[in-house]
Image (cartoon, rainbow, N blue to C red):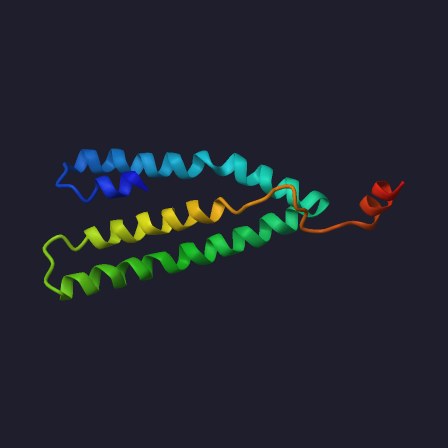
Amino acid sequence: MAAYLVCLLDISPWTSVIMFSIVAFSTDFGSPAMWAFNQDIAGKHVGSVLGWGNMWGNLGAAVAPSLMIAVITVNTANGEEHHWNMAFVTCAIAFFIAGVASLFVDSSRKLVVDDEDVMLESA
């Protein structure tokens, strides 16, 4: 999130490349935790859960370019000189919302309770 906000400053193209690299690294850095979370909550249904999440990620990736074009177009129509700034703010807000939402994730709650697990706990 902070790397996107740094892009709001009047920085060189190389600094922008470094900031985008930090965003890519930071995003991918959380992937192992996401995989572990899905394995914790899904048990033997982990493939279905990861497939479900992957579908939503792909839909988001399909919508994001159109959303960014709309954000940039609206700000260009308003006569703003730095029309990319709102695109960076939009991405930073998305990362902020994802970060806040992750605070409510509880990997101890299972998605599916199997009959076999219930039988083992009652024994």
